[in-house]
Amino acid sequence: MPTPLYLREMDQSHREQAMPEHDALYVQMNLVRPDPDETVAQFGTRIRRVLAERRPRNLILDLRHNNGGATGNYPELLRTVVAFSTQPDARVFVLIGRRVFSATANLVTDLERLARPTFVGEPTSACCSFTGDPNAATLPYSRLAAELTSVRWNLSADVYDARRELVPDVPVQLTAAAHFAGEDPVLETVFRLIHAPAP
Image 1 (cartoon, rainbow, N blue to C red):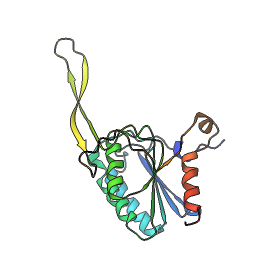
Image 2: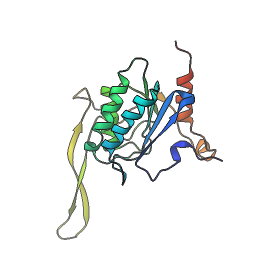
Image 3: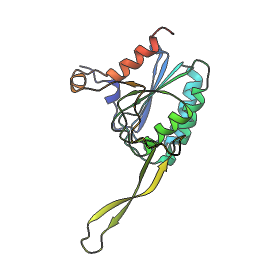
Image 4: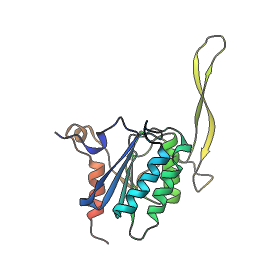
């Protein structure tokens, strides 16, 4: 049984794969952290070049395994996705799930505000307005280690946005049955959306 695309190369922070049969570029980002040979900013610039060369109509950004990193790492990738989203007939699909947290929650909040993609999958574990960026501390007498959040993030277009999760536009649950059968119902749903006749 072949391994589904979203479960391949999990040791990489980010990667891309052309999908000409779907007129799409698939971009997977597993961490908002650099790979040993490429920063997230370099990756964002490279994806911009790939999009310009291949000129796909659809961009699929898979964030389902991404539980964060550093918010300051992703602006170049965000610029690339936003620029692509402004092109005529371009469509952006962002695959989300329960592991989306921390810096990735900031990324999906920025994407919602700036690129207006179609979110597909399961609700995220955080979004919009939350505390983060933990600092390590050791208690003086017990010597217990603790992490205390130090920043309140609010990147939503609405300063009063109190959502604790981003609910997908197209909800698709990833079940154990699909996992063990080697299926990816989330990506399959995106393919159906891509090939559906225009309304």
